[in-house]
Image (tube, rainbow, N blue to C red; front, side, top):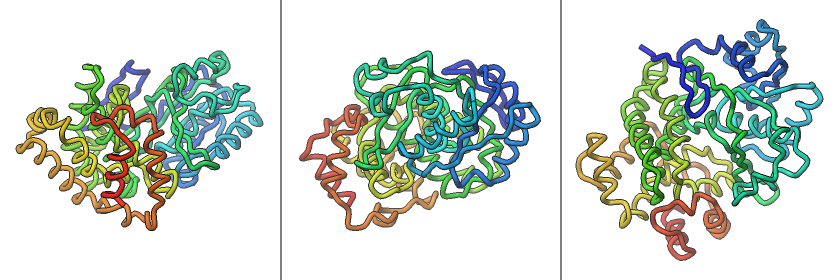
Amino acid sequence: MSPTANWSYPTAIRFGAGRIKEIGAACAAAGIKKPLLVTDRGLAALPVTQGTLALMEAAGLGAAIFSDVDPNPNERNLAAGVAAFKAGGHDGVIAFGGGSGLDLAKMVAFMAGQKRPVWDFEDIGDWWTRADAAAIYPSVAVPTTAGTGSEVGRASVLTNSETHEKKIIFHPKVLPSVVIADPELTVGMPRAITAGTGMDAFAHCLEAFCSPFYHPMSQGIALEGMRLVKENLPRAYATPDDMEARAHMMSAAMMGAVAFQKGLGAIHAISHPVGALYNTHHGTTNAVVMQAVLDFNRPAIEERMALLGAYLGISGGFDGIRAFVGELNATLGIPATLAAMGVTNPDKAAVLAGALKDPSCGGNPVPMTEENTRALIDVLM
């Protein structure tokens, strides 16, 4: 049976199968009367989206949609979305879809009232204080994948289309006012997307768990998130309409996004520039690089991997966890290498530069230097 619940952490969450029917009430709770639904091109014409637009119409919210969103959204998508928001006289956003749609949608709500360029709000120091907080529009988030956890995040990842760098844009008020987490919306995902997004959730939890920073609350959330992925991702992959597994994966995705406040690491530091340069699927890229990063971090995480293995019921300490990741990837049909994902003749220098500039770099348990990161990239490419 799929669980149903109302949660207030880290925001108001309406969790359970069929709860997309509450879209009108969710918008009312967020103070939104005329929303713009923002999603990606691939989702726009699908029944899951059209059904939601019909529910919006029935609730008196209209049925406005913007879907000019790339798989790795960029500032051009954002400018078009803000223009559509203003032209339609909207007062809030429904962020609908996977990570790309959710991230771009949150940025539309954030930037529609700002006067400075989006790059001025990158997650560096206190740059977020440059924003006019009173001009940020509310959003309701509706995830249709179980991976990024962007629905409960206070930031978005945006690619600079000129420099091919992924930037993290942060503000506390980017956090959606209400989330509808309806596992029924994830049933139609292609198996490859179920796999890749699920491994993204696992990567968030794993890197948070390994991060050297002190945050016991995130540590506990990360640990349980990995257990939910271990027990439910193979089920959701093998039996797409297993609603209990889908529900637990939606929980794991949100848990990963909450946990990584503790920090991320080399998995994401490598994955971000690879995705920006070669347009690879983010979660799948994380899965492909995961074992090499575990090896990279082994001197600092062996004791922690023993604790993780004990909790997950995996014997063998570090080696057992490493083997589990490889077996899970194989079960899910994850490509074995970046080359198999289409990353051929890679620009290793560009990936290295991007990795060392990525904010995730600072949370890795082994400090990432030019020398050791170059060696890691050589292993992967």
